[in-house]
Image (cartoon, rainbow, N blue to C red):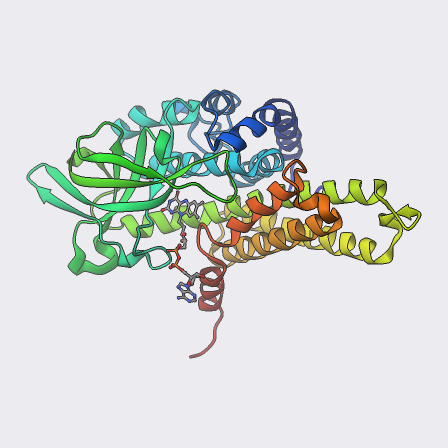
Length: 382
Ligand SMILES: Cc1cc2nc3c(=O)[nH]c(=O)nc-3n(C[C@H](O)[C@H](O)[C@H](O)COP(=O)(O)OP(=O)(O)OC[C@H]3O[C@@H](n4cnc5c(N)ncnc54)[C@H](O)[C@@H]3O)c2cc1C
């Protein structure tokens, strides 16, 4: 794996430590978690103890106070071992960073230490049965009633939902105000009216779970509001932009595993009297996979580095997410091809990389939405 101009020695050390952690501590949990479609809670706490659930969170609450590039390097390495575990870490990292930035002192003290340690699992609940890409079409509403809000609505595809101790919920507090009327709430497990209605079995990323959540006359106090009644959407978008870069890093990890597996297989599988890696057709596939992965890596690290320098990254984050996730789908698919029939058999890990990568162009803003975001940043003069 190459170094880049964006790394300091501290970044290299963080990457190497995360790689060792992934190989030694994450890998042993993967098979059972994948077959049972269950997040291994014991592992999640170990990830917390290693400091990987609060990479950008303030040190005074147990976080590492580190940067987005470090977060990317850690997620890339965890995803190399298991994209599904990296998936479960993402809401945790995102919710922690939003509370760190927008939360009141009371909210920070209440949530950050347990989120960072992995004791309290987080979900982000934006998507609904009738609204995914078009967030402004959500139907969930939080109606003010004195010092409380009464929430009604259904959220779907919510990562970590079945285990979540706290859900960051997006709801309208004032529909007539458009996007400015969207607000963020921290809703805790056990709040009357909040329930997990059903788990949604998935094709890949099976070491994490998604589910549907129901909010039915769910009453929360005003103190559950995060960042005021106005600007919830804007605040969430800012955090999601950074999370898209971490998401791109997740694509790098799974693509790297597929490339490694395909390279090893090409060197050992014999056909027509020689290793298949001696055929130019296979060599060219591997060369394209490696080149695309390197390009995705540079886009991702550059976007993270720019963010860490305080530069705007809306376009670069979308480019990194778009390119890394689309290349991951291709690279994992080519890795299956190089494995021939064995690539399609469940006992060969490469099929998991392919199933896991398929999600990456859909979740956290589809490829079409990333392209739309990039196009908006181009001066089209329309
Ligand atoms: C495994 C998994 C985990 C997830 N985790 C979470 C989570 O934790 N929290 C959460 O809130 N959500 C989560 N999601 C939801 C995810 O973010 C949405 O699936 C995604 O945003 C797409 O929304 P949608 O599925 O409603 O598709 P739609 O928005 O209905 O889109 C359908 C198709 O139309 C295209 N399309 C839509 N609008 C346009 C447009 N303007 N121009 C061109 N094409 C367009 C899309 O790109 C897509 O190809 C998860 C989803 C999955 C599958």
